[in-house]
Amino acid sequence: MSRPAKPQLSFWQIWNMCFGFLGIQFGFALQNANASRIFETLGADMDAVPGLWIAAPLTGLLVQPVIGYLSDRTWTRCGRRRPFFMIGAVLTTLALLVMPNSP
Image (cartoon, rainbow, N blue to C red; front, top):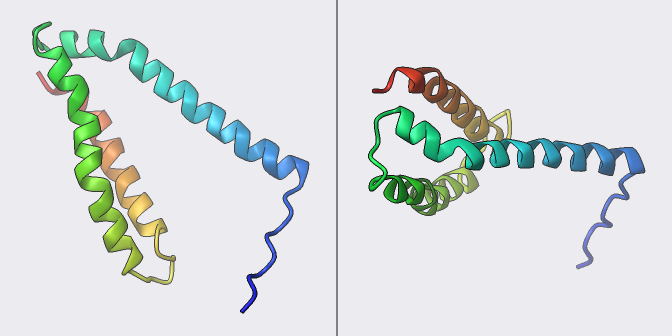
């Protein structure tokens, strides 16, 4: 059984993909640069900031395999992954809207 040939991407397809990744990297850099200050503004003690920094990676370590397992066994008319991305985007947007009022 042979594998199907990989599609050849044009220069502009690769450019668009890399430009999107650049935007994601800017977002991560802004978050990392300002997270400690945001935690302090929200009322966290400086002694609690390291625990808050580790909370996101630990949550990802626990949640990502569960979402991957569920999405591998889900099939909708929108595909397998798209519904999970949409739900995640909506929940993230709601969390960001509520965050300034969290103290």
